[in-house]
Image (cartoon, rainbow, N blue to C red):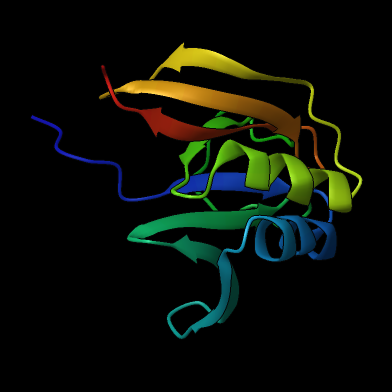
Length: 133
């Protein structure tokens, strides 16, 4: 049985733009590692106990998805900061909110969500857990 997701992979067309969005806007931490076995450099984003590996479109590691491309990720992030905080922050960085706030059903709870795109067109959902009344 599967118990959890260890990491996901994001394909980026421009590493700098990707890092600016995920680190400066969403507050994730960036890590750059040299892999001694093959001499490659790997990039990843960290938040809480979670990790997103970044593959540059022109430097995809194998194995990879059959159709590795930018703008194909659709991901939901849970935040303890209020949705109004995220609305203000996205506006500050001139990032369009394409939908929301709207009610959604998450994996384990109801959510209040807003949606935007990252620099590659990946759909980003930022959500607050809504406690049942």
